[in-house]
Length: 177
Ligand code: HEC
Ligand code: HEC
Image (cartoon, rainbow, N blue to C red):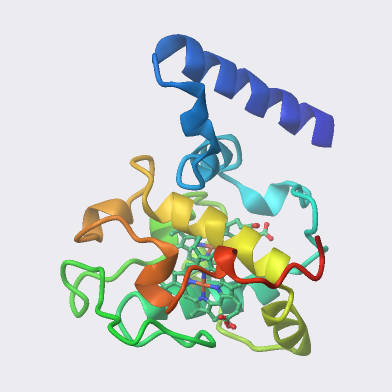
């Protein structure tokens, strides 16, 4: 399954490269990487964990983080060091918020109905720097992606420092590397 998924990603990358004359170095940009992932993996529930450093995480545990992110688009983020000058990146943070179904378009499951439920595993994962960076990188990638409904609700592309005082990827927390 993993090899199959990888094969699809490689194919997609190859197709993308032969059609656009984008320099390959762009592929290293963090904003671009998740786009491929989003296209190849529109149904995350159906696929195994992929990237290195990822642990097997039950969907409801991720759902808690998803609720936290979505809330951080319209109210002060609940991360450890929020951007002191945070302001909502949404065009209309009251009447037109980003919602689960903007990104989870699989109609066989209504992601919008998965409740916010904190578990001890959320506590552990918040301190798993590598896991959080991986999850957020994918999430921010899909938020800014033309392929999903969230982007149209944004004033400008969202970056890590929209919500974090400093880019967490630059922090010297490389315990697990
Ligand atoms: C901006 C896009 C975006 C929004 C909005 C969003 N998600 Fe997600 N969600 C993702 C991405 C990308 C993943 C895959 C992350 C991963 O598995 O590493 C994901 C994964 C999940 C998973 C885990 C699925 C699995 O296979 O384990 C659940 C559950 C989930 N989201 C629920 C929600 C809920 C509930 C909401 C609303 C409160 C929400 N999401 C809002 C992008 C989004
Ligand atoms: C829309 C706001 C938002 C954006 C954008 C965002 N984050 Fe976060 N981040 C959060 C919230 C909220 C939490 C707290 C989640 C929790 O602990 O339940 C968090 C937690 C984290 C953590 C765990 C440590 C902490 O500060 O709580 C890391 C690491 C992290 N984010 C990395 C990133 C990276 C890397 C990016 C950019 C790719 C990013 N985040 C973009 C809102 C955001």
